[in-house]
Structures are given as structure tokens and as C-alpha cells.
Image 1: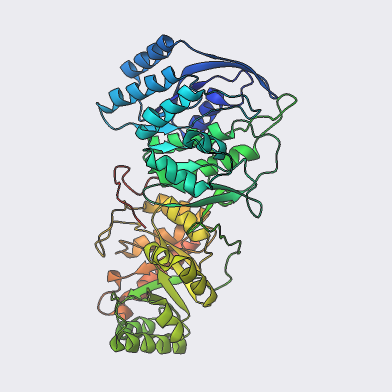
Image 2: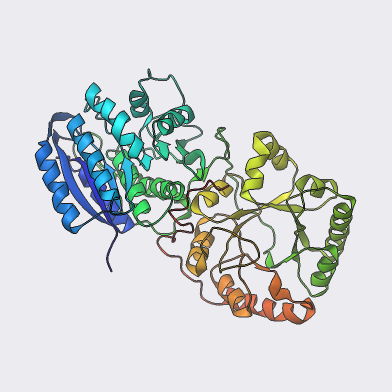
Length: 517
């Protein structure tokens, strides 16, 4: 198997903590091949950097020329560059590489050591602004680095404004990392701004003095994820997970701050970050709901159909009537469905119309992420206060991270198989991603999309799905189809659990650039 290739153009660390040493560990953890191109040699130990020597521009050119002839990259990641000449050289190489095909550029602007020693003069800063950031697929500065790149005084702007400023300079995506900042409620907060999602990416802060190489690990992990085909928002979720895992494995090496230690991270649900829905860093630390398993989950489009599936023995139902207008006819359908499900002891989720559902006494609602985003902070607060059980759709890692910030009744993972129910840009999740969702979500997971045969229901249940959605497979007479589907679910729950993969696969084409909710 040929591994994706990334180049890291950065500095050495004689103490083995940061720079190319950290980049190599991160690349190995995510399963890509890293080519280390030395831009600067440092003399340092765990307490200080004593000397920095940029390599001759000709030597850097020779390294890149050699790599291009045999190991062309999918992603180029930069760290310590050392001079404006190096910055310009990287920019020229990015243009040259992109003539042959897509190449992502991750810019980690290492402008100073954690001990305070500066690595970039005014000429280098100008080169970053003028030629490197306009070519960047992703930039990963910390707060102080972002301020220096934008020419701002410390504390002049918050992370969201800093990210907007860097994107205005041309960076397609930005993560302003916050590991060095105070954080909130024991969380380390990074602000991410990408074409697909923005918000605070939050994970528990690790109380350790051994954090050397954290920024390099984060940027290189994101670069590796991009090389694996993930879009920037998903790559940053994986980078946050990889960095948290590396921090937990940090160790002493010398008298000062020891290095973090990136390594393969399997399906550990404590690594999954939360992603805020807006600029307010609002997160939920709720445990798993104690409600019954959702089981066979019927999605129907009328109250008459609700009566049919209830008579067939279904006890989880979604009423999905796709209309924005709150008409008397819609109200009558919802009222009828609420009464029928209450009498049968079934759990009902009304699609989209949450205020109507609340008014008519429905126990739950199902919303897509675009609907929740459109509510704004005030609307989401009102929904939280309504007491409605909430189901949320998710198709990608950033959407999964965002659902966890709401602590819903369940998270829908889809489409598991190709579906014609509605047009979507998402690739099928497959059983591997479904198993990963079930292991990582920290909430009950509902499998949805393309389930047309009883065997698929058994396979989804074996992955750990708490509920499995039935739409077209119910047929005209659910009393004839539901018993076989129920038996398949029971067989899947009784079977050996399908193990999750170490990493999920991308669910969106990396070339798909339109913003998605």
C-alpha cells in the first residue's frame, strides 16, 4: 500500500521535542509518509533555544527539487522557515507543484520559541502576509502569532476576529489555537474558520508540564488528515484528537517542558472534541440518556402512515412532512400523530417544526444541522429550554463534534448506504464509519440512509446503532415487513460487535468547496 506523501518544511529540534521530530510522530500516528525538508537547524534543550541557523536557500531548493522528482506531495506543511527567502522559496514551489495537480498548503507560522526567542523578522512577516497566506489551504497560528501576522497589539482582537483577518489575507481556512490561552471551564479552545464550519473546537485541558511540540503536532496532524482526503473542518477535528492524545502521553525529557508524544489513536470517545454552534463557547457535559433503545425507527410522511407502522409494532416514529408553511392541515397531521403515539406508548419525533411540536405536546423533534444553525443562539436556547427530546443529523466529523455540544437524544449517522431519498453531496458512510460513530458519539446513534434489506438492519445493529431507520423498506403493508426487520435488529444486537476502525474515512469530496451546514 502506498501512503499519502506530505512534505514538512521546518526546523530541527536537537532536544527531539518540536519541529520535524514532532511532525514525524504526528505523520506516523495518522498513517502518512512524511518527507522532512530542513529549513533551519536549532540548538536547544528543554528549557531554551540557544541558536537558530537557517539553511542556505540553495540547500532548501535542492531538498525540494529532489523530493519533487520522486515523492510529490499531496500536502506541504511549513513550520520554522527562518527567513523571507525561505518563505518566497516555498511560495514558488507551491505554484510549481500546483501546475501538476492539487496540493494543499498548511502554514504553521512558527514565529518565536515558547521561551520568547523570535524566529521571524519584519521582512519574513511581510513575506508570510504577501505570498504564503494567500496560498494557504489552512493556517494554524496561536493567538500571538495571528496578532503578529496581522500587525496587532496583544489582546487587540479575539480569535474569531483574528481568523477573519487571516482569511481576508487569503488563507482558505484558519485555526487560531488556544492551548496557550486561559480557556474556559477546564477546556482548551481553538477557533476554527473553514468553508464548511466555524466555531470553538473544545477539548479537556490536560494539566501537564510536558507540552513541547503541541503546535507542531496539531498542524502536522491536520496536514496528514488533509492528505487522507478530509476537508479542513474534519481535518481539524482529527488534529484536535491527535493533539489531545499526544498531550496525555507527554513525558519528561530534561529539566524543562518535555515533549508530547503523538501515536495512533483508536476509537476513544474521550478524544472527540465539541464544536460550538456560534461564537458563544456553549457546551454541554451531559451523560448518556437513560431512555429505552430506539430500535426500528420508521420515518413516515402522514398521520395515516403513523397509524400503519404503530399497528405493525414500531415504537419509534418520525413524522416528516416537508413543508415550511404552518398550515391547518399540517397541524392536524401532527396532532393526530401525537395522539396515536401517546396511546401506543411510542416515541414520536416531528421533523423540523419544533415550535409546533412543542405546542401540540410531541415528545421530540428531529432537526438538520442547517436548521439548528439558522435558529441562532436565541433560538437554540429556546429549543434547549423546551424540554423536547432532540435528534440531530450528522454526516461528517465536524457535524458529529457539533452535535455533542447539544447533548441530543440521539445522533443520526448517514447516509450509511447510497440513498435516493434526497440529493446530498455526502459519500456513503458505510459500516466502518457507522461503527466509528457508535464508538465515539457518546450518544445513541441512529443509522439512516439506503437501508432496503433486512440484512442491512442486522449489520447496522451489529455496529452498535441504537436505532435503524426504515423508510421505503416498510412497503405498502408494514405489518408484512416489520416483523422481519425486527428479527434482523435482534440478531444484530446478539452478534459480536463490529469493531470500529482506527480512523473513519472522509464523507465529503475534498474538492467540494461550497459551504455546507
